[in-house]
Structure formats: C-alpha cells, structure tokens
Image 1 (cartoon, one colour):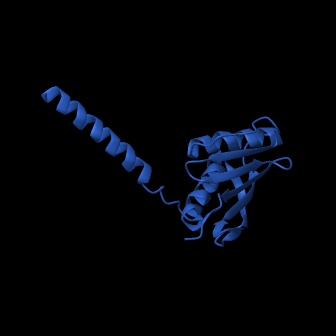
Image 2 (cartoon, rainbow, N blue to C red):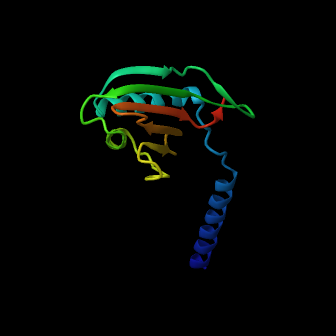
Image 3 (spheres, rainbow, N blue to C red):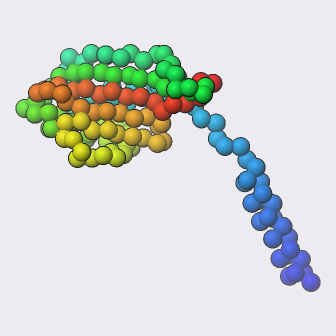
Length: 151
C-alpha cells in the first residue's frame, strides 16, 4: 500500500510540475535601449582588438528606430583605419572576425559568402554586426539590436 501511495504522489507531483511549466509567463525581453550599451561595447572592443586607428563614429545610436508593433531597434556604427597589416580588405575582415570572437560569442551565418563583408549574429545578446572593409586599410563595423519592445 505504501509503495502504491508513493507512486500516486510521484505522478501527482510530475503532473503539477508539467502544468506549472505551461503557465509560466515567457521571460520579459529587454528593450533596445537596454541592449544598446552591450552593442556599443562589442563594436568598440572589436575595433580595439583589431588594432584600429583613426576611429570615427558614423551612427551614434541613442534613438529608437521603429520596427512597428511597439518595437524598435538601435544602431551604432563606426569606421576606422587598420593599424597593422597590409590593409588587404579580406585580411582586415578576418582580423575583425578574430577580434569579435575575443569579445563575445557570435555566429557567422553566411561565412565565406563575401570575403570583404561578414554578418555576425548573437542570439544571446540580441545583436547583429556587419564587419566590412570597403577599401584598402578600411574597417567598418555597423551594429544593430534586434527589434525589441519599447518598454
């Protein structure tokens, strides 16, 4: 009898846990404004580790760009000169990729589609970066947050 009672209690607990898991609210998403400091840090640190010089911010961020449905994203972009190496655009992009991997975990969904421009995505940080070298010795990193709730 005790063994049967223990089995019933165990099943009841498992059913209760399963039902409570179904009713828990989804985790609240951060806002684009909350993610923006991480985005800026990733861009700035990537350029630092890639030995960028003459760094200039081309899109400073700080404002919501509407995605509709109460969502927005933020953009931060920087251009610089390669401080070391030959300035070969393909090598510059490889240096940016290598540097980004020192900063945070990003995936390269279209690796090798273009050797002078690479997209990097972080689901964890809800950010996307475009690493490029449009000309000899030029570095451009453009980052944006996902479309996230305004509040």
